[in-house]
Image (tube, rainbow, N blue to C red; front, top):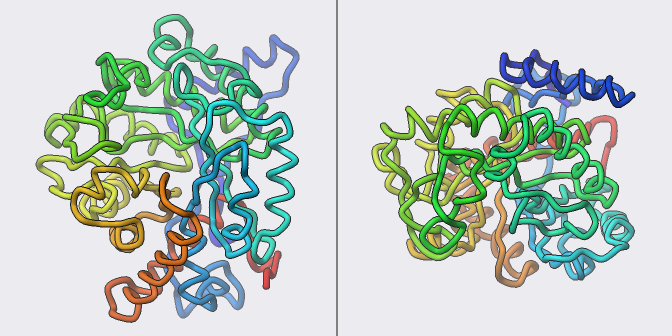
Length: 393
């Protein structure tokens, strides 16, 4: 892989790390090694070494590159239903459901054995706590985030997330679409409030401290945390799953909702999910499709260097502006996202249509091949795959 995967931790992480080390020592555990930091976002360069991930990816077809940028949905009770998509090179599997089968790990292992070129997909799900848990029957129940913040210390939250993360990894789930870093005090989640109890606190400092403790616990377990929903969905006008919504004005987010995400970037967390809401004062289109939100704010201004995912591109907020998943994917990748997901529609048909839409966009010059290579490079880094060593066909 290109670049170093190790970096110093931020002040908040250092504080939480010391507390966690004391807890582990008391329990006879071992302090986990430093987290691997994201590979710097790179493009193909004529001065690159003879073999690099980017040089290998540059030799791939547009269709193959595009497949690696897509996470396809699957019911956790029937993961074999997306075997064809995994064989076609889908970069991720998004698990849905409320009770996972006891042999989920074996089913996922069998599914991954057929992955294109031996490049396993990221296996992701929502394991936040409270009413948002997909596999609590296998990993254990957690309180809502707000309840965690009210009843637990950051050290205890970290320990709980690590325990759940270890159980997730044992079942082959490698990515948790959590924690929610949004700052919200509503009564949701519901149609008018997408966060509510999913938010740790109305206080940005508490939301940051407890949310990052949760994320660090997952990382200690070997699971990739994805902080969401950038740049802050707390206080949104509605639920983007159902239709269009706006966040508070960007000037308001700067002093509140954006702060936990700034802390996450400083702490070197590896992945961020971008919301489907528009942000007054920043972008009139969904943030997930906005270069101002993704490239301008997250990458250029905050200097985030990890994996950037979109929220579901089959959401009502995307459909409302007349876009299906294929064209929305083109716009999201063009804007700077690295990976997209969707939650409805036939996975195979949507993946094929998305590949065709991207081929058209590259041919027309709307999306540069180097942007696809850059995005796929971030996906490989998240998977910790060295293409030069693996030499996949």
